[in-house]
Structure formats: structure tokens, C-alpha cells
Image (cartoon, rainbow, N blue to C red):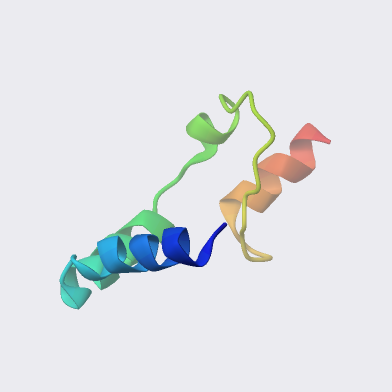
Length: 62
């Protein structure tokens, strides 16, 4: 990724008021995404914590 692309992404992200961004991130991280994870058909990085539901699903798939 070029420096220009990175700066553009950061600029776009900063347009959203911080309180709304924090609320969105908090709500997003507390949803159950299991039904969506199994539908992913492309190589995907899913980042989760040790006790996250997604980790349990991925462990079961292996």
C-alpha cells in the first residue's frame, strides 16, 4: 500500500465522529458472526480473542 493510499484511508476513517466510531466498534465486536464466518469463500484473516465465539467456530471446522 502506498503512503498516499494509507493517508487516504486514515482521512476517510477520521470523518466519522470518534464517539460514533467507538460505539460502532464496540457493538460490532459483541455480535455473533458465526453464521457469516461459515459463508466466507475467499482467503480471509479473522482476528479474535482466545474466548471469542469465532475462535470456537474455526476450531470446530478444523
